[in-house]
Image 1 (spheres, one colour):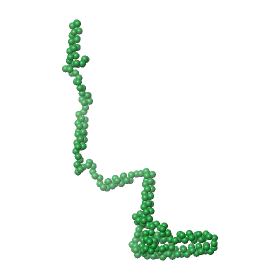
Image 2 (cartoon, helix red, strand yellow):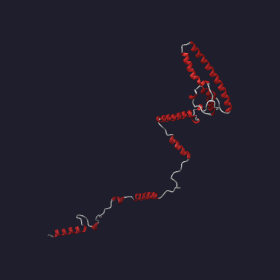
Image 3 (cartoon, rainbow, N blue to C red):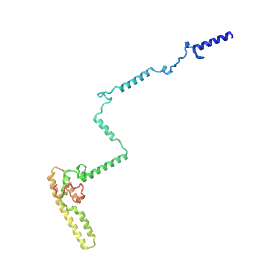
Image 4 (cartoon, rainbow, N blue to C red):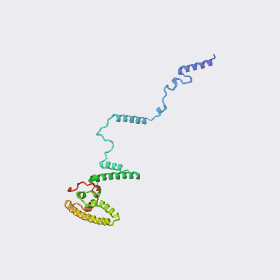
Length: 240
């Protein structure tokens, strides 16, 4: 082997012994480390690291430390008026026309059911305006406690109408006479009833508003007892 070839072979063997990898630089001449460091770690901002560490430590501290019941809750307690106005605003949220109509129908149906029940039981809370009050109640009890000729006006009118339709002169004359008698009796009975009721109301309720109570009672006397509303609360002959 010639001298230049031998020198080249010796240099190559020395390089292989020092580095252990063919074609790499020697360890003493700034070779790359065995575990390379990522570039992001080198160029990462220190301020971001500190903020992240402080946020994590704050979360751990808040989760481990119990809240003092007397400590402030972070917001002021609203006043009662403010809370009521908020609840009222929630209750008065705008609705569509269809929802509003449906709600009105339900409220009307509920009010009518209460009114029917009140008319059947005489409950003063849900009676119509024309039937409310102690004066109207006394007028109803006064009419329901006595016998009234006017309450039989409807059945007698039907009988007189049937007799007048029969083509017999004598029966038609009887029907006409009965009609006149019924009218006179009803007028007289209503006049006496109205006079007595007006006197009793003046004695019983001197300071109350009594306007229209007598007419209200006379209209009730024209109805049959079992068809009257509100239902009678006293028996016949019972003093109201």
